[in-house]
Amino acid sequence: MRSASTNLAASQYGVAPISVAGKLKSCELRLIGVPLVICAFGALLKPIFGLGIRWLNQYLDGIFLLRLGAVLDSLSFAFEYLFGLVIQVYLVLLAFVWIRGIDSPPERVFIFALKRMAHLAKWAGLILLVSSLGIHLPLLASYLWIGQFTDFTSAAVQYVEQTARPLMAIALLLFCSMQISLVLHNESFRQAITEHAAFMRQHWYRVLWFLMVAGMHLFLVCWAGAGWLGGYKNGSVPYLLGLFLLSGAKAICAAWFLAAWVCLYRNARRQRKEIRF
Image (cartoon, rainbow, N blue to C red; front, side, top):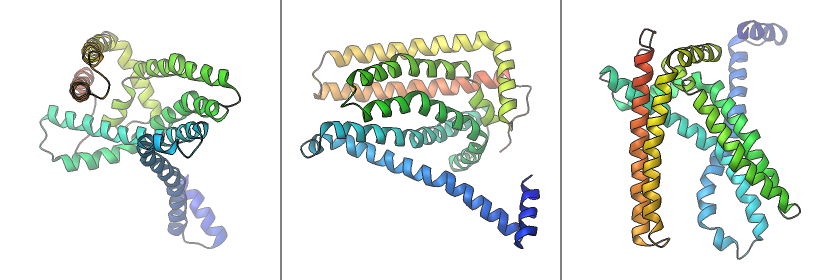
């Protein structure tokens, strides 16, 4: 389809097919790259804005700062999600390499993870679209009218925290094998959905036990962290030490869960053709 369209354009305008394809690819890169750069700029300004909001409050209106913070949060979400997705794919492939006993340097695995992102484009786009429409757009709209409709803002925040985010988390759990299937196998989006349905139908009990064990450990870590932080004043040295230890414990649990999930998935789908390095 792409070659036919480029040849047609070349015959009509007298341009070489290679140059037409290059121009089309350049336009696609601009359509993707320009919004991504804007989102990356928002992600860069977000922590700076958070650190300097008290100083800015001396010169700017508080409602304006709330609106500006909502805009920065909405812009930075896409970049943060895609950046985290790259790291997650890299860690999945590292666990896969470790399990298979493949001697591959981390730099090569990271480059391969960047290449595998093309297979996750539709899945990542769907997640971004649903999150933007269901979470960030209501919050952005509510903060834009926060001075006129305070009840609407409160209702929007309550909807996002109590309804939208839990539903999003449940949906991601229900489609838990989609991402790893796209990473480890050369599949289309439709094939990944079919394989996910077959995987859940055959191994739902394994997935259920995995989620129960992982949830129990994460709950215990958060419960212990909340108990520690609740006994000290906010901003004190023991409080900051507790935050550091809690973050480290969550990171260890996340790495353990990720490696265990790769082991579970590969063991359940061992008969399938896997990617080659």
